[in-house]
Image 1: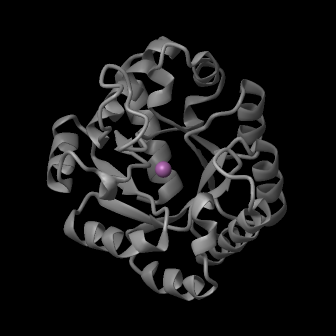
Image 2 (image 1 turned 45 degrees about the vertical axis):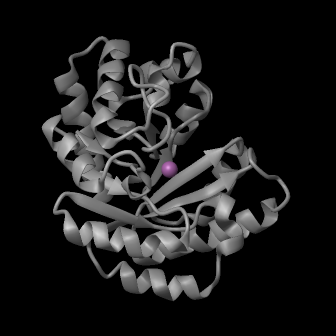
Length: 251
Ligand code: NI
């Protein structure tokens, strides 16, 4: 199993040593840590240097678009010389929290798509209540990068559109929630070859630990739920999604 989206730099109740150790005990082989803000970059570089099986992404989250600066392009290029930087992320559009700077979000998103293309790195997408614009911008500006729709939250129809483009869906703890009917349908409707496991720790903790702080070890509950929904065994979920992650992020 690979936790393809895990902010272990943001955990409050356990140390990163504990998070990495707990994950290893549950058979999670690798963890990828996305950036949200430029202030995360140093911490992520430290983590990937400290742990053999921890990888990083660099990027600016749409809710932090005001912290974007064009100088970051050169900074990211330099840091991405480290081969353990495996994606640009998380980047995208978020119309849920604050709609007042949508245009700035789009601008920052497009700049980072171009950067990912130039660096030949995949793109890890944050799309919250912005499906159409996210899709349209990726279609228009992404020339060559693999695309992961992190914490996928769309309909079956939208999932199928994304898969038609060859994109991947990041599935996390939400799928274990009883009322997440739409998510469960998505997981049943798309090919397993397009699913990646993730936690988005410290957020979105799966059942049975919902309400507490999330951590990479809990990605196994996501895998179990996917196995249950697809009526296959967990070994198949693990082997296919691990191969997917290794392919997308060139791990
Ligand atoms: Ni995230």
